Length: 503
Image (cartoon, rainbow, N blue to C red; front, top):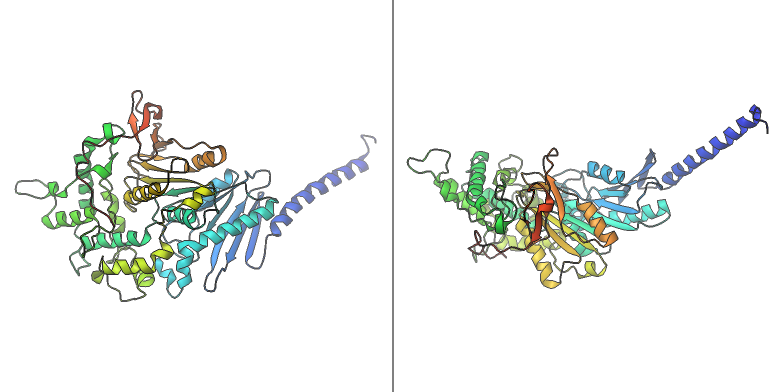
């Protein structure tokens, strides 16, 4: 063929273009082939996005989205991401991040629209969907679709969530131990009935009986309580508590014995201070809900150092009623006239635990099937969390450890100075997803998680240690994680009194 033969050159160019177009069309057809009666698809920039609806039982309608990267970009992983609160919103930013790392990524609306527990009004199956079913059936569907699209099953399957997502994570490990190879559970609101009872206790402690219009403690007083707790207990930082003496948060808040009475107003004392009624309300909040029949504490309190964040759940979005009122009126009692002032933290709480806990609580410590399947569980919680008490996590970890050794498959990391799922003055930015992948895929158990401050401009690092070890400064640059070792310590300075017995 002559290089000057334009007809032949044009023919070759056309053939190449046809091949390329055919290749692109094949990809589009493959994505399009996933469409069905309850499934729609879109394809753009090599990414196939699947939106599906699942109806496992009558009265259930569960939506999910699955994003599939191109075949050449796919890492072989499938990552499912959890939800927040009672919201149906998908974690789109986190989904985008995982997609950029080559994962097939999935999330569910948990079987409803909106973000208030009222979504279950007249829809009892929606409670089951939210409680456990939506994540499981979405994970099963996503695995099936992913396998069909790529022609092979995901090599590794992960779940990663915080708050309600952490709740979902523990529910999966307990109920469906083969759904995922690795699970990240952050600040799990897993004892859900007890958590909502704790919000209710806080509300009632902060109001005179029957008076919804006048809260006793406001944001100003909560901030004062936090400053008082820090002033009292920061002396324990460093040494046995871990961290550094100069840290602006509590490294061991569970050992802090702070009495709000030290802030009481007295003759000659300059403000700010707390009146007697405010001191009494604060003491009730620090104590946690108590069963009136036995005096035993039935909810875990929030820890000192988190007080400034309590305001978000001292009412229901600023309305004169407790947070999650819909949970009690719709889910627990099916009574639109239910009154929080009549709730009994003994008899009524027992009733709700009998009816709802089997459906929505993820508190079973028997994870033998998950361990036997080879699963790995990475659990973390901020010690300044004002939404879910860190004591829920340490209590659950202890119950699991009492049944079986945990070091080779389940580790809990506590983050001093971190709020709910992030934020706060401590070292709050770390990557549990990469840690769980290294554990599952290469057998590298996380002996520490390297964390950075909330401020992205800060360059300091510090390790988060597997509970009950703490980050102890061993010398060198205090801004470097290499200057800390994870060691078990013995509290001698603060923890001189036993905490109350919990139910």
